[in-house]
Amino acid sequence: MNKNILGIDWGTSNRRAYLIAPSGACLAEHEDGQGMLAVGSRDQFGASLAGVLDAMRLPAETPVIMSGMVGSASGWQEVDYLDASVPLEQLPRHLAAITDAAWSGRAHIVPGYVYRNGASADVMRGEETQLLGAIALGQRNGWIVLPGTHSKWVLLRDGVIQSFATYMTGELFAMLSKGGTLSSMMNGDTSDAAGFAAGLTQAARNEPLSNSLFRVRAGVVSRSAPAQQAAATVSGLLIGAEFAAAARAAEGQGITVIGSPALAARYALAAENFGLHCKVLDPHAVYCTAISQFIKA
Image 1 (tube, rainbow, N blue to C red):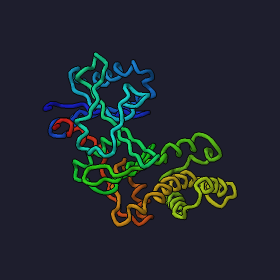
Image 2 (spheres, one colour):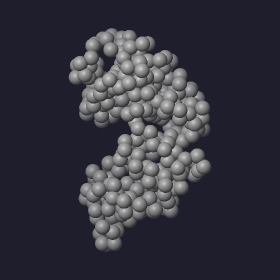
Image 3 (tube, one colour):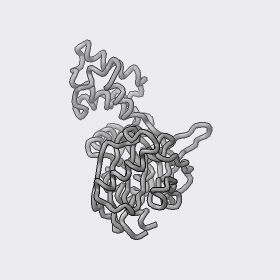
Image 4 (cartoon, rainbow, N blue to C red):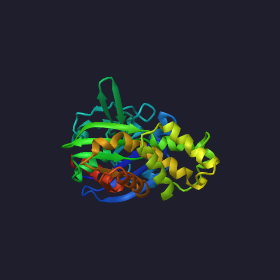
């Protein structure tokens, strides 16, 4: 394939589109709130995709590669997961063609991955595309951390997933902020350094998370801790819980974080707190590099 491709990271709440040239250069971008939930019914995805092409003033025949929740059971078309043993560089061979006749031959979905460990399983959709980009940028081995609504800790060996684990960090923070006993205290700045450090310190003690979270409230109502630090402390507790669970396996190797500047900065602080070297990759550059791999395939 030797033409521009529109890559779309189509998540639950948001959608980001990038027009990528064969050289890997990003020629145009578009972002909106038309994630899977906003589109609604399955038969509306085609019209929604057409809206992206119109907004970016792209010809109708532009090839489209989509990743994320668009391939889930609640998305446009469910695409089976690949087993973790399939090398990430083989993703271009496993694209699922959209069966909608209007998009036949023009639009494809990247499959997610499933990792099985005995009777347990973990899954990802969307992160596999970022991992492909990281590999193309030379990150073929070691721990990759993809923070977000559902944070992933992925171990790579020569471009193959050895294991991964998901932590509902972002989702839990959002739920605690919107309702429950902590919600009225969660209006402060999550980047508050003292509050975030306090949360990390508590998490490092491996105490029960539910108890640590309640003690944030207890600290505020007893006037033992400032209310404006509560949100940052909760953020530190939740991110710290990830590190408390996963950091031991990364000792001596460090981690590579693919995340937005603000979120990556918090994970870098957490890594320092847990004695891990941390390298940060820009998610925009990683994703554009990933889409360029589909052009080369």
